[in-house]
Image (cartoon, rainbow, N blue to C red; front, side):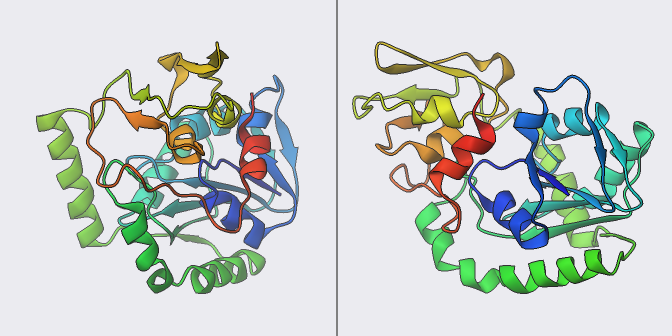
Length: 256
């Protein structure tokens, strides 16, 4: 069994490669009593600012996992910053632990920082299939492993934290603005995993109270009508969704 969260499809694609019984974390969060029982239970999610997403932490903290093998896989695009070690520390703080925590490098979909078209050009160099196959072999063999944090990753993470302390957050709310290209299709409201968007008079209206900046809405907009309000994107016309995952799959996973 795998419980997953995905915004652009990378983590769902990874989950599909690792198991066939998949449950969406945004959907499971609607349940008051969350108890999961399986021989092996995994959590697959993306890296958010060098941590697993707050929503995923809340899900894990409020759920019971009855299993003899618990693992987490974190998808990322450039640096993982030693997230596996910090994730095990988080689990320990809530009285849980993982038998296996690893990361897999995939397309970097942080459109605040990267040009999606340029990222596509280097996607093949990341050897995604090879890495996922090795992770699956590890899980099938019940390998016990917590990915260490090499010095370079620790230095990158510490540099990021220092930058944040000096410069503040990379973004602020209101996060998005919607331009005249909007066709009122409602894709953004259906794909938001936190229910932050409603459609009024055929236009999206944002309530940022629960927004986690997953960027699902801006990435999925078919008209590219959603832009960042206060951040200059490297390429405002380039968007990303994992080619193996359909838009409908993302909507079904995240719809509130």
